[in-house]
Image (tube, rainbow, N blue to C red):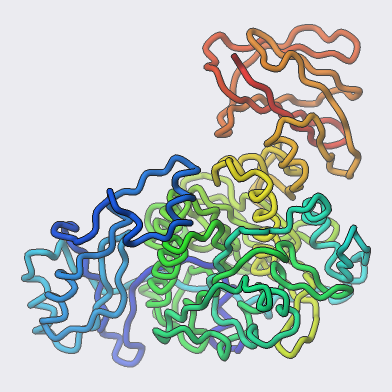
Length: 552
């Protein structure tokens, strides 16, 4: 990344509006919120007028109703604002608002007098953190990585990052992201239209389109390289060098970030990009942008803002998840800096905040940590963001580090897992990943729930009594009876250290345990337990085991 601005850009995504003139430090852009969406030509009963069939299908599959937030901002209200002489720069249907450029005070007065306007406020707050390129690492770290051929893929040096989270396991059984749509929101995708690492992506028609919300056009290939690097970790397909974690998925490339300036408007650019991704039916949104401090200190975030409810960026991230999108956001690279904590919107609820580990699964010291200001554990999961193997413009391969890279590596693997379990909701996918990850029973603010394993999560989602332990030992155990009524048992050749019983949403369930009989253990179920699917997570000296059962 280039250096002034990028020194603060650790690239993690999602954003919303507020901007300023850095010369005069007077506000020229305002956030105009409207009272309602009355008189709109659109209706909830006819969503095909503003959502694609795939977007509607995603909602239908997950039981998510189309609601008033899906309806576009009323064009009549936009016309009234434009009639004041001000210029509408961006609009957000989720927030029912617009970003408006004001050239003189009379325009602001006129906007405030409009009956459709709820309130007007200057664009403000949010910023970026350290760049991936600034992370200082032992450059010999990548020497421990493996190069191995798996089934039809020759991963080359990219094997370790795929294997660590079981992406190769999903590939082996045929799940490589086919028909899954991933939106990548970033700072630019330099040469992604010509780089040979993306040949199959282009030739197979899986590069669905581009949008540039910085310049207001569709040209993203001449802009910054960071998004292209991230894309290579998912969509790259050069045997013997780099196989991405979702080499058969389809992609939208959306630019929201201008690396050559520190304009707060970039946050709003992200929200508009996320709304577009939702409308065209993206299953997954991955972003490696984040915000903590700005050049103008009065706009800085403080730790207390990290509650998932203060920042509009975080609110919008949660909104995307509520629409059924699996949202991944990089934790940030401030773990060894003065800020230390995750940024915004990594604090958002219902998203997967991603931290970094090295090839041995050890927390990277640069990876930002939690908790959120309201005490929630962050990050949620971790993957290999230290010495990740990426492709740069010019078809040059290299090792790079940052939670920016950990995030797309995991995003591609999630696409494969969800492809294998298409009837599950985004929240069920996230819960399965957390319940089967390496620190499922002992989550913390460094690793979250730990390093996930896609095939273990897949088994958990499908009730297969197989789990992969922390040291990669396959352990088989049997749940019985299944379905269960008043008790459920299991056989295990190891002594359990802890046993956790949760519902499918991750809520802990109380139980009693009867005496052990040989290798058989019996849990006496709580009479208040309702019918449904429940998860058992067992920690042993060998690692974490997972399975599920049905309570009648």
